[in-house]
Structure formats: structure tokens, C-alpha cells
Amino acid sequence: MPDNMQQAPIDTVKLYTLQLPSKLESITALETLIEEIADKYQVSEDTFGNMMTCLNEVVNNAIVHGNKLDPNKKVIVNAEVDSKRAIWTITDEGPGFDYNHLPDPTAAENLESLSGRGVFIIKMLADQCVFNTAGNEVELLFKI
Image 1 (spheres, rainbow, N blue to C red):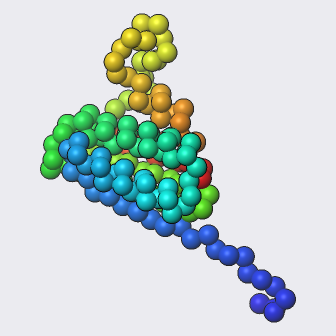
Image 2 (cartoon, helix red, strand yellow):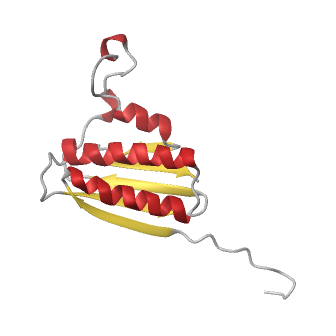
Image 3 (cartoon, rainbow, N blue to C red):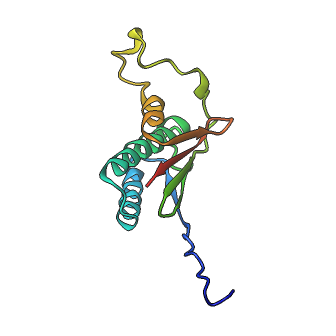
């Protein structure tokens, strides 16, 4: 490379992984990782809140609904982070679910229901939300 040309800095992608036993106390390790990433990458308060809300919801659902609180089953959390975005992939060992046919939580008959809003909330707060075909893995993207 000629001396008068400068190479653009490479934005390094950092990978993070958690293997969580399927018990509710595992959420603490997730929250610690989210805080660590938010601090390291100077994530805004809004994005931090959205990540914390979405990831808590997804991992809680993976533990309770996917793995049925079986401590022998794991929830795998992967994060791929650089200065512009965080991509989180959460996978459980359950059979999955049909995310295309969930009841509409905004429909009149569902407004007073105590559950059924998680996927709706996640889709509103994450910049991108993609489920695998089986419904036991979700990828969430947050711009940071």
C-alpha cells in the first residue's frame, strides 16, 4: 500500500456466549452480560432498555415454555457485537412454536389476558426479529 494511503480501521466483531441451565435464576447471568456489553459499547439508555426487555422475555420463554424448566436442557445465548449493532441469537432445546399464528394481543378479546404479549413486544422493541422455522431459535438485532 502506498505511504499516502491510510487503511480504514477495522471494526472488530466480538462474540459472547452463555449456556444457561433452564431455571429462572439463569436470567441473572444474562442481565450481567447485557450490562457488560452496554457499558463496553456505550449503548444508549433506550437501546439498553429494549435489549434488556426483549432478551429477558425471550430467555424466560425459552426456559419456561421451550425447555419446560428442565435444568438438564440448556438455553444458548450468543451475541455478535460491534460498534454499530448487537445481534443476539437465543436457542432452546424445546420443540418450538408456531410464531405465525399467535393471538393478536391488541384484539379486544385479548386485552385483559395476563400473557401472550411477549412476541408482540419483542417485535416492537428490537430493530429486527427473525425466528427459525421450528420456532425454537430467535435472532434479535439492535442498532447501537
